[in-house]
Image (cartoon, rainbow, N blue to C red; front, top):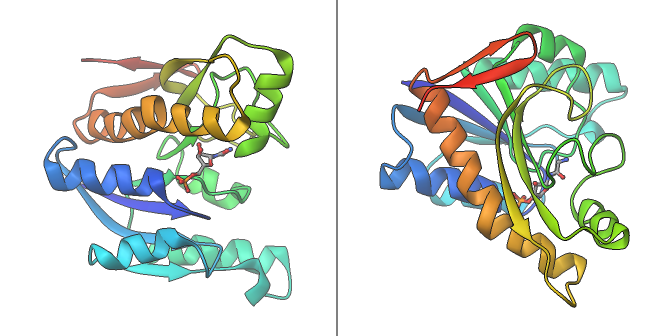
Length: 208
Ligand code: GAR
């Protein structure tokens, strides 16, 4: 059984997709051990509570320095004994102590087809604003392992989504979530839980 800890910052629709996947049996061999948010007001925490999943807030505001926050976050994650850490809209940079401790055991969902519109400053709605202002015709989402860079780790799954005439960033964000994110994040967890993903030289191999 893969013990999963989900890190969140906001609405938690991706967390919900993972919970639904586990509850429906679409995601197998997986248990959600806990949810941690950096934001006490995140609706994602409410979603966890509704499903009887342990949840906790660890906010930078609770500590005097970033170093202390990084330590406490790593400690809180460690207490839940994860086999896999899932960043589901977690908008905090993962500290190097954590990436070192959990090499190829942290995954992230990003709302673009990496390497487009990713890296520092590209998160949430900003990604879709940038895609629309560049005039792309195809958007999408990526699940990847997390390394020390921003959105640079090995890619696990990607799914493309059409941009439509008259799209607003909000409309495109919603379509990318519905058609890509909520599908590939649970699917990636299921693949990992069933030993189907390996990493060699910065690239993944997926056995289906
Ligand atoms: C999602 O679109 C996710 O891809 C994005 O934040 C949103 C969180 O929504 N993550 C990033 O931009 C990470 N760079 P949610 O809280 O409803 O899952």
